[in-house]
Length: 310
Image (cartoon, rainbow, N blue to C red):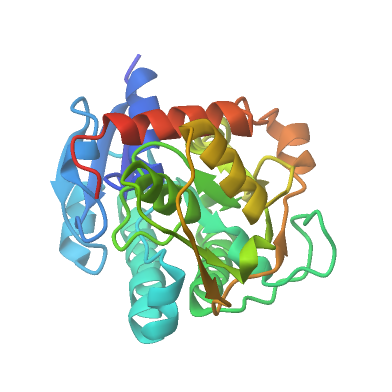
């Protein structure tokens, strides 16, 4: 039986590289397509084929899709502050990129895509936990671009029959999170604590967040990869934790504290964001395997073992 060939855009990044590893473990024929603007070739599993390319290059993506059965799409601008500072670049990259990818899929007869979406499509939700059918009112360009991508995927399913499933991640954390500049709380804090540096804290840590371990996110992609139709699911733990309580938990696990710097408010941050994950559990049986304590232990160990603490 022929192995499925999976093209993973953005497969040299944080969630993409973890998903590539899982696909390789499952015996898939994996091709990674990444321009390395935010990813690292060293994070790509050696069992995967690597192509350095950009989704804004139509010829390159068309060539990469030859012989591909399914697409996992991670390539996008994902730094909220960057989207606020340069919304034109964010929209061009995220929206033009998905259109080029879908057009290449249409030409090459590729009928399945799993899309990396975000809880940022909800903005500041009125009801928590957030269900998939909660109101959508993004509060920064990044969230708006992710919601636009989902609308484009809907149009390509209904017009051209390209099946898509969008996974709306809540707060992802775990190994391989080498995003530069570092903006996510967990890697920012762990790296700073291990180097005995001060901790930046926004909103006095009073935001309520839902943290989900990256290996659980990768598994969700596998669980939905054969779904037909136009689908969307929340991917979280289903549990909220105050950011300041998360920081205390990390201090406790590392074994010492460092100074906390009050950074005040930060534009683009919702106050409360916790997922209702009952829909994906009911339909495909996915639910998180890692609780926050185990996930943090593995993440801290990853950064302890890192060759260079960036």
